[in-house]
Image (cartoon, rainbow, N blue to C red; front, side, top):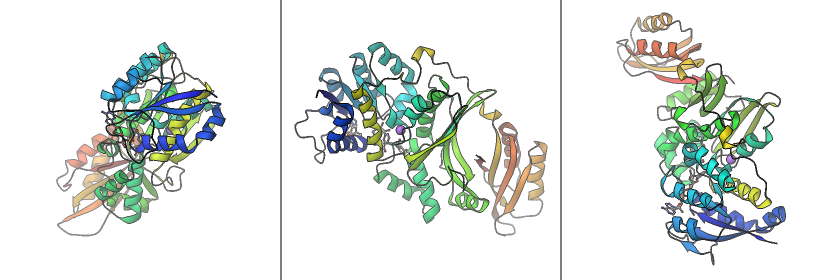
Length: 427
Ligand SMILES: NC(=O)c1ccc[n+]([C@@H]2O[C@H](COP(=O)([O-])OP(=O)(O)OC[C@H]3O[C@@H](n4cnc5c(N)ncnc54)[C@H](O)[C@@H]3O)[C@@H](O)[C@H]2O)c1
Ligand SMILES: N[C@@H](CCO)C(=O)O
Ligand code: NA
């Protein structure tokens, strides 16, 4: 039985999980591929003492390992769109070596260039772990659904945010406290603002868009909003309205181009997305022949992510090849983006207003003037002369009309804080 020689750069949460899986399932993986998956080199800032790496040469400089070590696959688990991660991946591909990564930031920014480099070098560039952790969604879109024209792909793509939103709802705990817990569980990015500001979801969505629609990965055209402004009040109000708040990534074909948006959403509690909780992710993809498909599983953490990393290594070991983004890189089309202002949907708006007569009439007039149809308006509590929260929902409307109405509402003297808006998706 011959060996597949693996060099691994990054031995943190995902690297540690990957080393453990390769050791623990060594016989199974060999039986599945007819090759022994052998760790021949590793690199990190420091060699962790708790991993079974005895006898595996350690490099304190990952660039040196990528350039000089003798390996068949380089596994990049350091992170970051540029810098060291991009250097080691580029060096490996230039040597004609296969690369596996969990680095969605790098794939979102350099996906096409790296796919081209891999093609020129006749190497595989795998990133199953980069999107939705352990869910094999890259393989599903690239291979399982390849016979379809897809109309949309959307889902919960960030485990940290879903964990935070779920725990806040279940326990009433504060945002910061729950974020610290998600970090200690190994879910969050090195800079957790990537998670909570929606950037990580946008990286993943840009990758899914490319696979779903045969377009060049174009992170710059994703509309991105995070979950910082979602309050415990919104979470309770959503519940009363029959919704859950989820950070979603949505990519859809529209008449005006491809819509790519990331923002918090209210989704029906009983929808398949609405009941996906904690660190779990879910992805829905709709194709013209297959119809609707749903994939659910753990989106972050050492073991689910290692499962995805090793699945890419197995494809390489077994000699299974498909184009990186499902098409030869030169056939990927430029992405024609639909403007967010052309999006149509329903909205929830939270206002803080002075509790005095006439305020509702002013709000209703602002909506009327922009031809936005109000569904309901509810004042929470009573405090004459002081401020109270008001919840407003509106029927399907064009985003640009909604934004104009919001400007008018914000200008009302009795509206004392900027309005907070959450889009509602019916699914
Ligand atoms: N944690 C998760 O649940 C998860 C899930 C999917 C994808 N990812 C992605 O996987 C990658 C790694 O994430 P992680 O959570 O394991 O990170 P981590 O911080 O736990 O580990 C990072 C590793 O990289 C090493 N490293 C950092 N700088 C280095 C340098 N200059 N040279 C050599 N090694 C260096 C560190 O020593 C450490 O071993 C990131 O791209 C991340 O986005 C993480
Ligand atoms: N920080 C990411 C890791 C998985 O990509 C998340 O929470 O989903
Ligand atoms: Na995945």
